[in-house]
Amino acid sequence: MTATKQLGQKPALFWAITEAGRAMTELGMSLPFRKFYGKTNGDGHPVVVLPGFMSSKRATAPLRKFLDHQGYTAYDWGLGRNYGKIEYQDQLVELVDELYEKHGTRVSLIGWSLGGVFAREIAKKRPNIIRQVITLGSPFRAVVKKNNATWLYTYASGGQKVEDIDPELIADLPNPAPVPTTAIYSKEDGVVPWQYCMEKEETAIHQNIQVRGSHLGLGVNPSVLHIIADRLLYASEDWQHFKAGSVLEDMFLYPSL
Image (cartoon, rainbow, N blue to C red):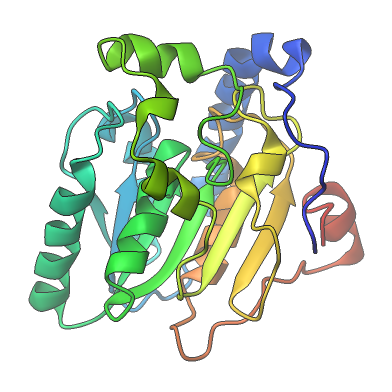
């Protein structure tokens, strides 16, 4: 699928002001889902979960617990709260190097929002040891464009604007890493424009999947958890596009498919 060309608008005000309430609903729905969702017999390979901007390991704890239950070895990114610092990249490369050496197998990366932007860049630097990348509402196609979190970045970075980041890095962000990548997005996202969270072009190893839900709830959204559980079953060599299990699932949970 080719992403729509109608880019540039902020998320609708309705989706923005209902973000917190919708995310809490998704969290509530995820509790019974995570309890009764069957195990997928994960192979134990390491999976690093990167939090979104201004988030920390507390926000990703439910997702990491779900991954452990599915049979994987889940890791927090280990850098505390995500303030969007460029130097995180080098530290994260060191982390995946260590995990690859420790486990003797490739590492999967799951990045939520800004965490997904970092995940893609790490995979570009270490494609030989990254198994796959999954992004959750990550605006990698236009980090400097208008969204409802830009002001927060400016505040947290001491006045540095997003557009002040290295222009070469900014120009490279939309380019996908040469590893299997799943870009999950929601048209009800109240924080970043959903069009920026998609690959411009899908390929044999790059897929966009639309879900229904909030930005803040993507890490606990049952539909997203199902996609993640399915994706992690595949290695780089046998990876294939995700497919809905039924017509109803396609229609109500994954409209883009």
